[in-house]
Structures are given as C-alpha cells and as structure tokens.
Amino acid sequence: MPKIRKILVANRGEIAVRVMRTCKELGIATVAVYSEADRSALHVRTADQAFLVGPPPSRESYLVQERILEAAKKAGADAIHPGYGFLSENASFVRACEKAGITFIGPPASAMDAMGEKTRARQNMIKAGVPVVPGTAEPIATVEEARAYAEKIGVPVMLKAAGGGGGKGMRKVERMEDFESSWRAAKSEAMNAFGNDAVYIEKYLEKPHHVEIQVFADQYGNTIHLNERECSAQRRHQKVVEETPSPILTPEMRAKMGEVAVKAAKAVGYVGAGTVEFLVDVHRNFYFLEMNTRLQVEHPVTEWVTGLDLVAWQIKVAEGEKLPYTEAPKPNGHSIEVRIYAEDPARNFMPSPGRINYLRVPGGPYLRDDSGVFPGYTVPNTYDPMISKLSVWAPTRREAIERAKRALTEYVVKGITTNTRYLKGILSHPEFVEGDYDTSFLTREHETLLGKGEDPQLTEAALLASVVYAYQRDQKRAKTLTQAPTEGGKGGISAWRQASRRGR
Image 1: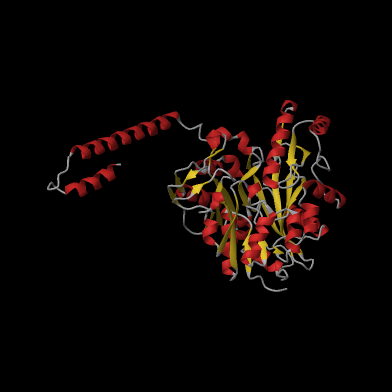
Image 2: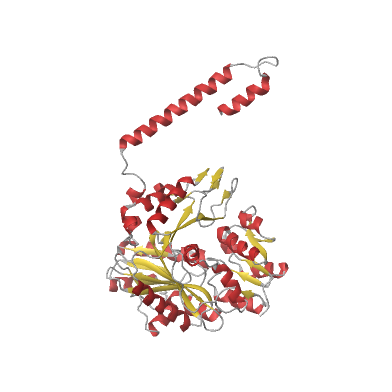
C-alpha cells in the first residue's frame, strides 16, 4: 500500500495536537478542521493547513461528514485520523471515506458495525461465549418499554448510549421515580455527542472495578493485547484518573482478560487500535462491557509502560505494515494519568469556560502533558471541558503517585477554575493509595476529596492571611498614589506610573 502523505485530523483540542505531533515526526503533513469557536485553538495553529467546517455546535461542524470530507479533498489529504469522540466510531463515515478514496485510520466499517454499536457488540460477545453484564440486547424504543424492563430486573440500572462511549449518554437510575427524566437526559446527551439517541439498559453491578484491555491488530489477522488500564476513578461515569498496571490484577487475570479481548477483536475482523472494556466484580469475576473502536483518551499510560507510540502504530497499520510483535510486551514500571478539566468540583463539576490568563505547566523527568490550551486561550463552553492530560511514569506505583502529586502542585492555571486540587485529593486518599478503589469511589468520598474535612483552624488562618495580604497591598497602593508626581520630581511621572502599576 502507498505511504500516507497528508492526514486530516477530524477532531479538536489535545487529541488533535497529539496526533499531529506524531505525524510531524513521521514526515506527514497535517490538516486541521475547526468550528467558529475554535478559530484560535492550538490544533489549528499546529497543523500545516486548517479549514472552517461550521458554527460552534458539534452537530453543525465536527459531526457533519460532508464538510469534513470536503475539507480533506480541498487539502489533498489522503487519510483521515478521527481521534476519539465525534466521528471516530461512525461506520457510515468510514464508508464515506472509502467511497471518496480516503484512508480512514481505524477499523473497517464492518468491525465498527459489529462492535461500535454497543448492543450489537453485546450480541456478538454472547455468541462468542464471552460473559457480559446482564441487560438488553437491543436499544429500547420507548420509555414505557424501558421502564418495564427496569422494573423487571430491579434498580439500580444503567441507561447507556448505544452509539458511543466516553461517559456520554449514560445515567445511573437508583429510583424508579427518576427513570423518565434520566431516560430523556441520556437520549438527549447521546444525540448531541454521537448523532444517535439510541439507549439500552444494563444491570448496575455494585462496587465494580472498570478495567480495560488495549488491543491492536494489523490487516493480516495478527492481533495482540497491550495489557490493561485501571479506570475506576470516575465522576458522572467519566474517567478522571487512569493507571497501568491495574493494582487489582494478577498475572493470571491479565492473561485471561487479554485472551478474551483478543478473541473479541478477532471475532469481528478488527484492524488498528481498540479497547475492550470489562467490569470486575468483588469476587474478581469479569464481564464484557463494551468495545471502543478507536484510540482511548488514556492511551498515554500504555505508551509509557510499553515504550510504543500507538498513533504511529495506527498510521503504519493503515499503510499496510505488519505488527512487529506476536504477544503482549510485559509492562515496564507504572504510569498514572490525570485529566485536567476546566470545571469546579465544589459546584457539582460545573464547567468553567473562560480566558486562561496564566498557565504554568509542570516539568521534570518522566512527565508528559498532552494539552490543547495556552496562555491567552479562551476555553469555549461548547465542548467537553477537558483541557489537558497529565501523565507520569515511575518504576513503582507509589513513586508514580508521588510524582503525579508533585506535578499537580506545579500545575498553575489562572483565569478559570480547574480540578487540580481535587485530583491531588484523589491521589492522596488512602483508598486510592492502597489500590482497591471501585467506580463508586469518587461519589462516595466526594466531600473528603473536596477538602471539606480539613482542620477549620487552618482554614481560618488561611483566610486571615489573605485579609492581611489584601490590606498591606491596598496600603502600599494608597501610599504610592498620595505621592503626587511632578515632571521635575524624583523619578518623574514615568517612575510614578511604573510604581502604580506594581501596586496594582
């Protein structure tokens, strides 16, 4: 197959920048697409070319297949990388790329049909003999049918989008009184995120671990797994902290789950990078949850412990290269990733869009910041509020935790509210440090993670210190202003203005 010369990245933010960096290292030209809200975005500045594809709402820009393909044709791109989210799991888009003669860097449409649609994936896994979480085998058409099924299996249940993952279109229902409102919310969010409002139901497992297996396959039937990622630290079913290796897996469990994941990928003729997700119950039984037919947000931790560039692998496989490995490489050391969000955990994780007035990114050995922002950038209120992914590597898990905590201490963002303090709370919590935390951990320990259990005397001291500082600052400013300047006075007007500015 011919080598790829130019790639259009059909995404935005940090993932678009991350893909473009690998492209540049491979000598491949890049093309960005952007909405009106993203004119000054970092991914637009990073690309060799950029094309406007519509107004801010993703349904009118990033999700419009015709506009993405039109931009690719204008730019002369011979391939499209979808990143994650948006069109990354849309089989009709894959077929549209094929029809246009453009290489889609991802699995074939047939594999996406089989696994990208969550209920169809469940059916295929049941046929393959893979254990699945109890639930419906098809999307449910009406709220009346859905309510009847939920009453039959009993709450709590999960309402889940059939057309995509990433925590979008997902609602936990603990009381039947909340069912209809949760149903409407799940369908609406699924439509906005994936252009598909189909929803199905799963039984909610109590205190499960969310563990996923990274798989990779070439076009010649060679399929391997690249070990697991622990993703149980979640808020609103959205992953916040990920790590590898999982602190709960034994080598035997890793081998068994990897074997099942490879079996699942081979069953549908998978090609490229994909992730098979499992729930692990309190007895360490694991159940197939879904397969994400794309690159995952948390792929950097796998890159840290394997030494592989998964985006480079995606491109090379799309060019027809064979995988250089026949079995999973043993994980080297430990890696942790935390997601930096423009949001306020103390206000129910309310998004905090706005202008970044100051940004200081942490440094040091074995640290990586995948970011889509810069000082002066305005975070829009239209898209997911994640602005960065901070990941670290260390020889041991304890060292990785300490390195991540230190990095978060150095991470300074002013102008918007972020969750960095909350993330430090997670990494410092005894339950996380011990490694046996489940998907209810963040909800259960929310108040503690916010720091509301701190010593009130220390809080009062901090408040008094801030008052004293503000008083001294104002006194200094007043003294400066009362020293009326004259043209011939000491320092003159220029010096007075400079002192005044320092006072501000």
